[in-house]
Each structure stands twice: as C-alpha cells, then as structure tokens.
Amino acid sequence: MRVVFMGTPSYAVPVLEILQLSADLDVVAVVTPPDRPRGRGQSMEATPVKVAAQKADIPVFQPASLRPSHVQEELASLNADVSVVAAYGKLLPANVLDLPRHGCLNIHPSLLPRYRGPSPVVTALLEGLETTGVTLMLLDEGMDTGPILVQEEYRLRGDETAGSLTEELFRVGGRLLVENLGPWAGGQLEATKQDESQATLTRKVERTDGRADWNLAAAELERRQRAFTPWPGLFTQWQGKIVRLLDVKAMDPPGDGLEYEPGQIGLVQGLGLTEVPLGVGTANGILGIKTLQLEGRRAATAEEFMRGYPHFPGSYL
Image (cartoon, rainbow, N blue to C red):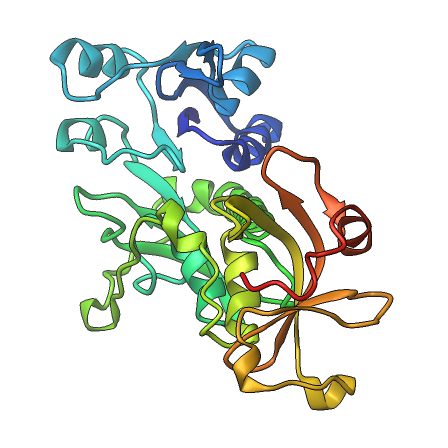
C-alpha cells in the first residue's frame, strides 16, 4: 500500500517509523512545512519529520500551502492509496483530501468528539482527567470533525506532562494505524459519524497561560505545571526576573505537618523537607518546589537555589 505521510513535530516521528517497519506499507513521500528560521542566529531549521525522512531516504515535499494547483498536481502524481496525517498542523483542502484512494487518516490524541482542536493533551491534564485516549479518524474539511475508525483509551498515572503524554499517545496511535490500515483499505472497517452533541473544542495555548496565579489551589498549579511542560511552562516573577518552576508538588499542610495561613498566599517558605525544601503559599495548600530556574541561569534544585539566593525564602512572588 502506497502511503503519503504528513507531519511536523518530533512526536510524529515514531508514527513515521512504525509505518516504515510494516512490510505491507510503502511510504512514498513525506509532506512537512518549510524550514523556518530559529534561534538568535535565525539559521534555517528543518522539522523533525523532515530530518527523519531524509535519514530514511524518503522524498520530502515542503509546500507553504496545499491550495495551489501545482502542489495538488504534485501530490496527485504520488498515486497514494492513503495519506496518514500526524500533527501536520494545517487543515487539508477538499481536493487534497480526495486524492488518496482510501482517504486521509488522522491520529488525534483524545477520545473524539471530546477535545477537538489544537490542545487536547494540555486540556486533558488541566482538567485532571483519569482517562484519555487516541482516535484514528477519516479527515474531512472541518477541525477534527471527520468520522471515527477506531479509538483506544489510555489511563493516566497522574505524573504525565503534556510532552510525555503526547509522545505516548502518538505511539499508541501509530500502532492503531498499522493494525487498522489493512482492514480499512479492504472494506472490513467502517467509519462512524461523531456525535456532535458530545463535542468540545480546545483553544490554542498562549505563553501567558503559564504565569502562576497564587490565588489558585496548589493542586491546580501542579496540574498547570504538568500541562504546560514543555511550553510555556509554569513561571513566576522575582526581583524583576522570570523564575521557571520546573518540578513542583502540591502539598496538603495538615498531611505534611506544615503550618499554613491563608494570608501567606504567594509567600516563599522554607519547608525543612529533604525532598521538597521550598514551598509557595496558595489559596489552598502549599506548592512545593523541587527544581527551578532563574532567568539567565541554569536550572537548580531548590536546595542549590536557596544557597545561591538565601533571601528567596520570605519573599513574595
């Protein structure tokens, strides 16, 4: 079966690799966005999917848009049986959706129709779900609105970050894809229309979402730290500089034998605990800090940070 793969970030690479390992599939081309300038030097950087495709000697196409007729003619010349989409980042026009014999299949990291849109994994973590999952779907012109081929639930442990969970869900999606491509192409698998009454839509994450609001509960802030890792992270400000909170733990003062007063919201406290030496007062509980990073400095354990900045405990954030 001739496959065109469309993807962009690093967590889409394992899907490409799984497709390559299948003896029944031939990945004839990879479609990924153009190289972009990155960093202080603004040097051009390829997408992780492009890098992986080049290592595997797979032809790479990098159109800025899929709408021009010459781009669509080039895709048509690939004579694909199916297109596989994994975090490509753009909606596909109707003409492109119609090119492969068996359509365009997409891996979406949620149990659709819940959590359509750009941030399904982040939203699942923010809302403290115990279970999420992966959907293999047939793309249409809408945003995650196409019919569902198959889904698989994934139970959360409670320590995942958006980065680690996204990687794991796309690995699950890659396996689902390989297991179901043959039955789909052979007419043995039916696509089921989504229940629009159950649909929810996620929004794009902004950098400002990562700013710590100490008027929230510690448990909420811990969820935000995991949900916003790797970007934008959970951060606060101290002495005019950004402090990134890299590893945190919500603490219930009565259970940990800690004293806590509601008026201490935003106050940095030395906790005297080996595992969690620092904490910040919140509207409900203390957010313990294990690792943090001051703007312009390397990441440090809370113990190291207190040695370098002994006046940090006792200050308000």
